[in-house]
Length: 250
Image (cartoon, rainbow, N blue to C red):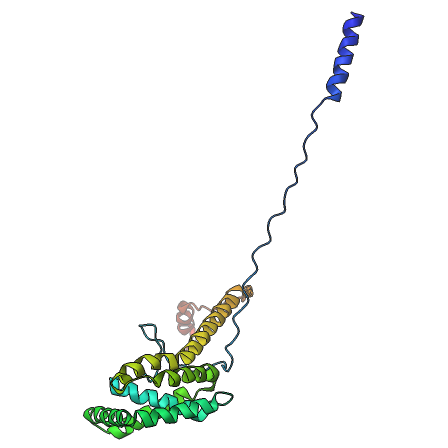
């Protein structure tokens, strides 16, 4: 019995020494929440409340270069490059002026014919066609004169004038139609950036309004108004007057 107890004690001691220690598992902290995207910056040259052309259903902005005939495209191209020659300054200024003058000389007959036929389009519309034509040309020059996209516009003008040197007269309308999209892209890109900034700002304002804590409604305590007690009313018995009249002697 003593040996059994001794063996048991030894066994317990061995088991205690060989017991499995719990493994400590490091738990990684949860990842931090994703940082909120930085708010869009207002495009350079823009300002709050700025008016820009409307975005049409086809995803394009309402610029003066929409829905043009071939002659209209040629004349609008000439106007755009005329603005570039007058407004672009810097290292490419001389290149633009020389390229524009060369285009006028090389494509003189095509340009004159395009202007004549474009004028006829306005006359065919009836009414005061001259005013409509002048208004459109003013809008066209103002469009390409916007300073917000001047640098990118001037770069596009340099490339357009360089490529125009190899264009045959018969191909000028197609060239003009394609290059007008290139020349107006700096402006439409600016409009898109401003539209995106304006939309984000409006969404932020709506969220701020939704998160504003509204004051709790005030409880109006109704004060009871005492009802005045009814005034006493004197009621007379008509029989009294009958008895009094009977005792009066004449």
